[in-house]
Amino acid sequence: MGKVITLGRQFGSGGREIGKILADELGFAFYDKELINKAAEASGIHRDFFENNEESVTGNFFHALTLGIYRNNNRLAEMNDISINDKVFLIQSDVIKKAAEEGDAVIVGRCADYVLRNHKDCHNVFIHSDIEERVRRATEEYGLDPDGLKETIIKIDRKRSSYYNYYSGKKWGKAVSYHMTLDSGVLGIRKCVDLIKELVK
Amino acid sequence: MGKVITLGRQFGSGGREIGKILADELGFAFYDKELINKAAEASGIHRDFFENNEESVTGNFFHALTLGIYRNNNRLAEMNDISINDKVFLIQSDVIKKAAEEGDAVIVGRCADYVLRNHKDCHNVFIHSDIEERVRRATEEYGLDPDGLKETIIKIDRKRSSYYNYYSGKKWGKAVSYHMTLDSGVLGIRKCVDLIKELVK
Image 1 (cartoon, rainbow over the protein chains, first blue to last red):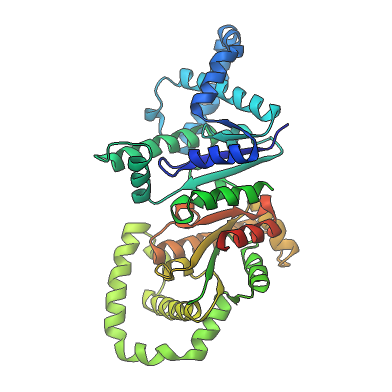
Image 2: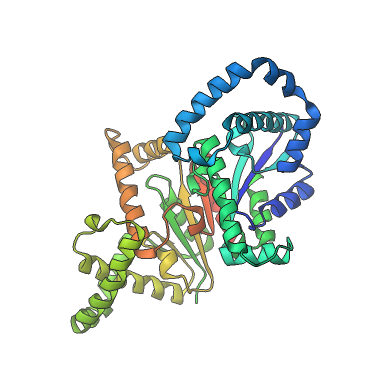
C-alpha cells in the first residue's frame, strides 16, 4: 500500500504542475484525468462487470446519488446522463484504488480524496489562487486566448465544484474538506511543493 | 515592521495553542482577543478620537458595513447595537496594526488577516478539525462539560463566521480566504506548528 497525495485545484492555480514536480522529486507515480482514463480503458476489467450487472449497479448507485443530489446542491439539471457518468466514476475510482495499492502516487482531481477515504496513508490537498493570477497563468503558461478567459475559468471551476460535491458529499474549496489548502498565487509553486513535502514527511 | 502570522480557527481545533507554541518557539509576540482588548483599554488612544468624531466615523463606517451586510449574508438580525460593535472593531484593528508595526507577532482571531491586508509580511492561516475531535479537545483540554457541547461549539463557530464575513467581506472557512488551512485533528498540533514555520520561513 502506497503513500498518496491527492490534489484538488482551481483551474489555472498550477495544481497539476505542483503535482508533477512532487511526483518527480519524491519518485511517486503521477495520475491525472487523462492517465486515469487511459488506465481504465487499457485494463478493461470493468467491461464485463457492467455488462452483466448494469441493472443492479446503476439501480443502487443511482438511488444513493439521487438522494445525494437533493441533500447536497439541487444540481440535478447539470448532470446529463447520470448512469454513464456514474459508470465512468466507478471505473476511475477502481483505477485510483488500484494505483494507491500498488505504490506511492500523486493523484490530481477525480475526487481521489473521497475515493481513498479509507486508505491509511493519504494526504489531501487543495490548491487555489486569485482569479487574476489564474488568468495570467492560463494565458502565459497554458497558451490560452485571454479573451473571455475569466468567464471560462469560472465556468470550469463551477463544473469541478459540482462534480466534487455530487460524488464526495463534501464541499469543494472549503477548508474542512482537505488536510491542507494552499494559495499558490501568494506562495508560489516552489513553496507549495515544499509545504506538501513537509506535510507527507 | 514585523513578520505576522494570523490564525483563524474553529472552536476546539487547538488554533490558539498552535499560536502560543509558534510565538514561543519563534520569539514572536502573542495576541488573542483578551490581550488585544487589554491593549486597547490601556492605550486609551481612541477615546478622544471617538468622542470628537463619533458622528462622522459611525456615519461612514456604518454606511459601508450596512452595504456589506446585505451583500454578504443578510445577517443584520444577528448584529446587535452595530455602532458599539463597529467602534470596538476599529479600536481592536488599531491595536493589531500597531502590534504588526512594532515587531513580529502571532495574532489569533479578530479578522487580523483582513485588518493587515496591506501589511507586507503577513501570513494568513486557518485551523480546523472534525467536530468529534473538537468536542474531545474542549472536554479534555479546556475542561468543558460535554453535555450539549457539540451544539455550543456549532453556535460559537456560527458567531465567528458571522463576525468574520461581516467585517472582512470574505468567507470564514473557505480555502480562498487564507494562504494556508490545516486540519489539526488529522495532522496533530506539532505538525501544524511545523508547517506554519515552513510557511513563514
